[in-house]
Length: 541
Image 1 (cartoon, rainbow, N blue to C red):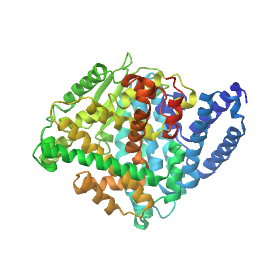
Image 2 (tube, rainbow, N blue to C red; image 1 turned 90 degrees about the horizontal axis):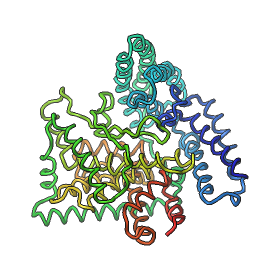
Image 3 (tube, rainbow, N blue to C red; image 1 turned 135 degrees about the vertical axis):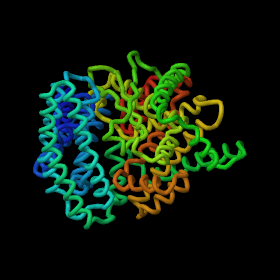
Image 4 (spheres, rainbow, N blue to C red; image 1 turned 60 degrees about the vertical axis):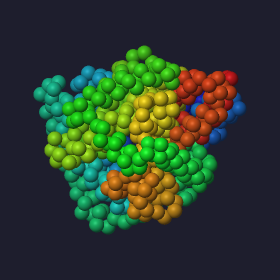
């Protein structure tokens, strides 16, 4: 197949992917997909699967020998871009067993947060989404099985309860531009919320009373998940072994710090939590930490910070506060408006009791907030997506976002800055980093246990309480997350893969220069972990 034919097939595969997941295209900055919801009706997804199989067959039939090495890699990426959704639809049947699948697509943040087009144009997309919600959710309601896993139903109900505040924010956004636009959103919002209420009522009255605990994928599908998301054929038992070894390393280091400090781990953590900003100082503290983290990356030559980089710190929108402590809204690789990112930090709720407010601020203590900032902003997600925007890679490499590469880089960033002295002098910056690392290790082990070894939520909760030093309630929430999100193994899995690549290539190909290694790594895009060594092997030494 000639390169021109491959280019055309690449475009066809990407276009087909976004027929199923248009909201993913919008988040990447492809605004021709504004106003479109994912497919929900079985007849539509069956047609999608038929065409995906045809496209996959065409990819496999092509003469790979006629392609340059970089396009051979792109061919594998395209195969995985099709294999992932096929796995979701036909193998684990996510659209049939998980109501959260439908609700996750209803966020309007992409339209509100980024000034990529005039407000009336963005409102047009918002209105189309809201108008489509009743039919979209009705299709999901008809499709979902009568008996669903209990955690999926319970969390979907919580998600549905939070969405009206997102719709209200969209109306407020439109009304600031004009009363007419506000009225258009209000009208569409009313119908959308009625459809959402029907969906929620169905979950409460029909699904929840019959729900069960049959959430596990099983060993065969779990192994398949690793391949379709990350191109990994390594047995998950080896990944579990690596995760346990990482947990042991982090535990030993935390114990060592406690011994050298002549204190206990609970006392270390108490000291950490007690040093927190006030409610009024939370956002200003986060802004200061962003500036400091950027200076640290630049002064220590950890990676190139592109010109135009600007991360704005804002309070998390009201509708997202129940699900997020902090998050990063990065510009997608196809976004043309600006490089600006939005770092959301969730503030104290004035309606909370004094005890609740104090608990929240303790969880966002100064060192933990610095660790979160390294993860979300510099050198984490924001810097990562700035490099993705500038990467010279193909369409496939702009579109493919490996969950374990994305989150693995951010988690690796936390460890990287501590290795280079961020937060010194004193041990508490490292204590915060280790506390988060132990949680991510527990997520990986819980994911494998819950989905391949018959673990209960109680078993996973006990692991997180013991090893990550969590109280029971947050530990249980973390364990429940593993039932519906087995891919929360991604943090530790990705971090370990990057550390392995660093051990192999930093000295031999980059002369020990961290900036060269990291810039090259980020220049790959967000590839599946199974391709990392192959990509580095192609880098001239």
